[in-house]
Image (cartoon, rainbow, N blue to C red; front, top):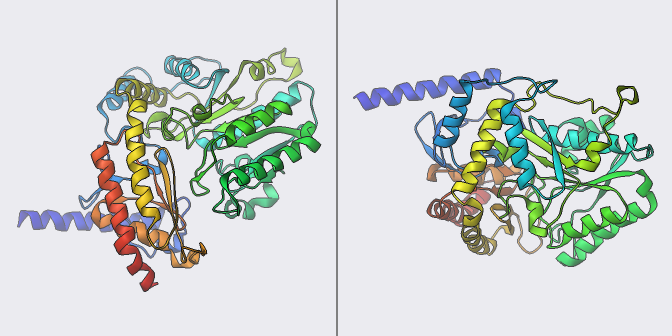
Length: 463
C-alpha cells in the first residue's frame, strides 16, 4: 500500500511538473506546438552516467547532456571542489580585478592546448567564445592597419552557435535563413563529405580545399580568417572530415596570411581521442574556442585562446582605441573555473585520454554492424563522436520527410530500455561521456543496435 501511495504521489508530481513546464518554459531548438502535445520526460536527478526522471526511471546519458558531460554526474571531486569554493567566493568581476581560480585555469589551458596559444579570454558559452574569436580576429587586422579585411570563410553544414556573429559563419541553412537580413557576409564552401557530395573522401577534400584557395587567391586581402570545426562538424550531423583535411586548411591559411579559428566547443576535451581535435593532426590554430565539456558539464563556461602576436596588436595608449571592448558579467566565474580545474585533474588522475582507444574501437565495431542494417544510410564516427543516418532507401540515400520524425521516434523507442538520446533530424547522435566505463558503453551500443534492428522497421511501417 505504501509503495502504491508513493507511486501515486510521484505520478501526481510528474503531472504537475509537466503542466508547469508547458505553461512557463520555452525550450531551445524545439517546435513548441509538438512539445505542448507531448508527454515529456522530466529529469529530477542523476547518478554516475545515468539520468533519473521523476518516476525513478534511469537512462544512460547517451549524448553527454548535450555533449558536455565528461566524468558522469555527481562526481565527488568536482562536487567537493565547488562546495569548497563557495566558502571563499562564488563570483567576482574580472573587469579591473584578478581572481584566483580564473588565473589557475588560464595557466592550465595554455599548458594543455596546442603550442602558441598564450592568452585566455573567458565567456559563458560556445557561441560567445566564437563571437569573441570573430571580433578578436577582425579587430586584430583593424589594429594592424589592414582595414579591408572584413570577411570570413566557413564550411557549409557548419555550426558555431546562435548569436548573430556565430550564425553569420554558421552553414546550416535552417538556422540562418530567418535571420539573413541581420547577418554579415561570409564565404561558404562545401563540407568535404562524400555522403553529401559525389566522389571519394580524397576528391571531396580536394574540391573543398580548391574552393577555399580560390577565394583566398582572389580575395585574401579581404579575408580575416577561416573558421572550422576541426575533424568533425557537430550539429551538421557529425560530418567527419577526411584525414589530412585540417592540415591542408592550416597550410592554406599560412600561405595566404589569414587566421585559422578552430572551434573546439564540441570536439574538445577528449571526444576525438585526443584532448583537442587539432592534436590529431598537430595543427596549431591562431585562435581556439572552447566550451561545453570545459567544466565537465557542471557550469556554464567558455574560453577563447589566442597567440601572443594577436594579443600584442591590442596593446597601446588609450588614445589609439586598440582595447578589446568586449566582456561578460560572469567572465571567469570562480565556481565554473573551479569545476574546470577539478575536471582537468580527473583527466590526469584517471588517465582518461589513455583509456580512449579501447572504447573508440568498441564503438567502431558496433557502428560497423549498424551500418549494415536496413534504413541506415551511414554510420559515422570519430573518437566517441558518432552519428547514425536513418534513410528511407539505403541504396539511393533518400531521406524521410521531416514531418515523419523518424529520428525522434527511434530515440524515444530506446527510453524503455534505459537510453536517452537526442537526434539531429533523422541523424541519431551517439556521444557518450568520455569517462564512461567500457561495459556500460557496450550496453548502450547494444540497445542502440537492437532498437535500429527491431524497433525502427515497426516505426517506419506505422508512419
